[in-house]
Image (cartoon, rainbow, N blue to C red):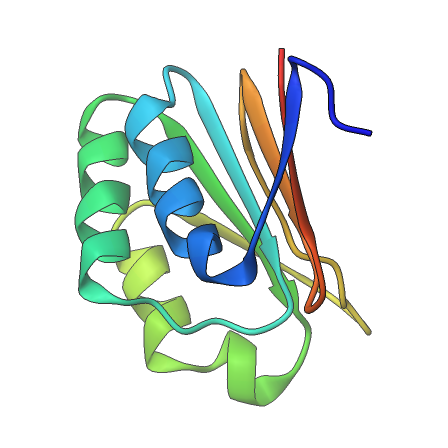
Length: 112
C-alpha cells in the first residue's frame, strides 16, 4: 500500500501532476509518452522550464504520426530534446525529485 513517499491517484489527475513536474523542476525533466498531444498549459510550463535553464527531454514513440507531428516540431523549436523509441508504450514523467508512472487504469506518484 502507499506510504508517505508515494500516493495513488486517478487518471484525471495526471495532467495536473505533469504540470507540477514541469513547474517544480530545477535541472531536468524527462517525459516518456508514446503519443504527443500538448495542451496550452503544458506548452507554457515547458517554455518556463526551458527559460529557467531546465533540460527538458521528451521520449516519444518512433512513429511518423508522432515524430512528425506539429507538437514534436513545437518541442524542437522551443529547445526541447526529442528522442524516438520503436514500440514505446510507457508513460513516465519525472524531474529530479518526483516521478509519475501512469497507465490507463492506475497512476502512482513517488516522491523522494
